[in-house]
Length: 355
Image: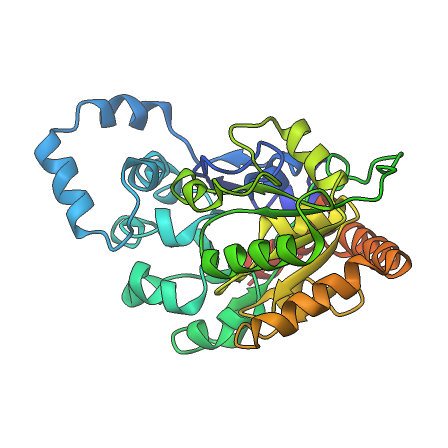
């Protein structure tokens, strides 16, 4: 996919940091690579950074509110020549809460600065400097639940919601669905997850259905593996390839995501793209992505047995599961595919660049 001539004239570049736990087909960066935008990355600055005294680097880290280390600071320093450029352009910090802090002290007005923020409001309070946010020409948000936070500091014409994308060419349903009478439930991720609820659901479903009827595929942080060690029907995946992850999704009867808060969620988007029906906490910005046609959205405060009953009912309704799965796949393709998201981003660039 190539960016259009009108937008390429806007001279758009982006500042990226790699998120280690994301699959190579999952990162936010994939849409910018598809657009063939250039990285704000100076080789000269890279050489200079290697010679920075440790004491100075430590001081730079100490002043930043971001919890990340070099993976947040270094991309911002590498972008310095771009943001100080005398040429008109747009520089997009695609992980604003991690990489955008010092830039207002050295940027030139020729460069318009956009930042994308991924965290829910309660975490933004901990990771974002308000004076720094106020210097932005625009913000791009992952979900509408973030808007009230930014409306405190920026005018509405600087706030855009462009939901996260998913690679629907890679994450796709299998041509041949598993043909067995067992149930497989997949859950992925560890950030802002209710692991106690996940454990309780595993315990109760195993008790009701038996460990030869219901199976669980989990890709979760290692520190939580211990709590599932006594369940023979729980498969704890680790360091699997993107293709293996896709197969896990494709083999699932349903996905179960006990979230505590969220904006976007990569795992849910990947499940949708693979044609999986979902049971998920109705929290944060998740309603920007899933709806009741493709998911059972539950109140995290509801009684456990009520939730388990709804899961069992869904598992025993194959026609409903199939219909929900098809809806999720269609929604992923039509609303959250890379080409669709790229169109939305290009529209934002055009609006900001032509101001």
